[in-house]
Length: 145
Image (cartoon, rainbow, N blue to C red; front, side, top):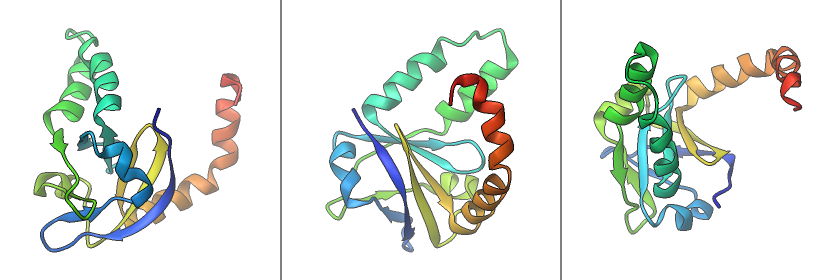
């Protein structure tokens, strides 16, 4: 089982390559999938975690507009990747544009996936979330968290 955690700052090179933290490379060595995420970031999954998510997505009812929209967001933009010999991934232009990635990025580990953020967007999101943390925690209290 994968357990991605932490926050890592990296730069995208001129060719669109981004280093993956060394501690995560083994988990991604069997293949990875990069796709549009939520909140204007990118999601990076191991092949195994992607297959779990994909089965849930394709089971959504086709008759519901939200199901179709979510399926298109996650599946149409997905790209299978392999790490290069230096532990980097190549982020396609359309995904860099979607996430407004500049040179400086932040890669965050969220247990079963990594998220790739533009550094400024991540800082803004993080500040907003930290300010609202008490309200968020109260809303989640019904879940036993």
